[in-house]
Length: 250
Image 1 (cartoon, one colour):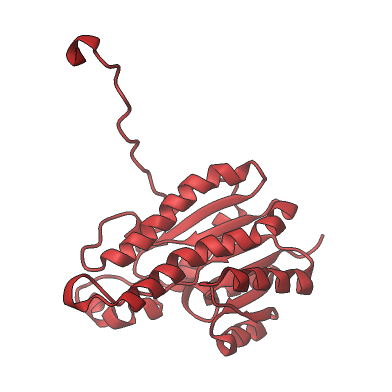
Image 2 (cartoon, helix red, strand yellow; image 1 turned 180 degrees about the vertical axis):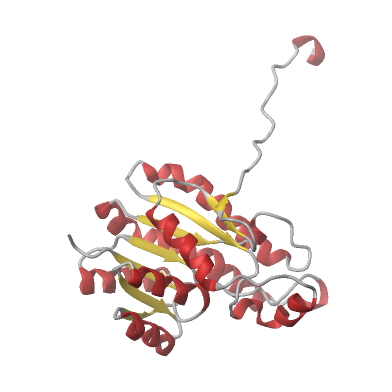
């Protein structure tokens, strides 16, 4: 049996690097993709995989990363759409248009473009995709509304596209971790620890990602929270319509 092949975006550090290690330990051939090519190459060397430079903001770059994967391995079984950054801006005087657009394009377009580029290859193998969302995609985050907005968008995309892509044999789910040891939390890490907020180890999130890549579910948004086993978030259904009383509108 051929080794499964996985393409990981945002692979040079944090959760992406941990997932590369976890998949390699399960005998996957890992393609580490990152805008930080030297960082991706270090990870690829560690896991005996391959590295490719990738700016997830560009559809053509995502297509090139998938083409590289197929050239190197001949197939694609899994993609982990993980590249992401903190927002770095907010409303009012601190609003910066370029910073806003950069965060939205990496955190949302990177998922859309990566999935679009990978779909033909994933259909061929009936493979799977996992996108990194966040607990910020499941709850209001008043201190960073734009980050919450793009992560809510990823959650909505996965819940909506998951069942649609299942028709073609592709499984799409999302991982929604809490505060995890990564570059994104670096500016607030000390404050979190001082406030008694536990920080999740990347290996814990990586195990949950691997389980999702191997799962048969679609459209699930699995939370990872300290002290709790990972599980699909239970969304409430919206209120359904009620029959209209003709006399009430006449």
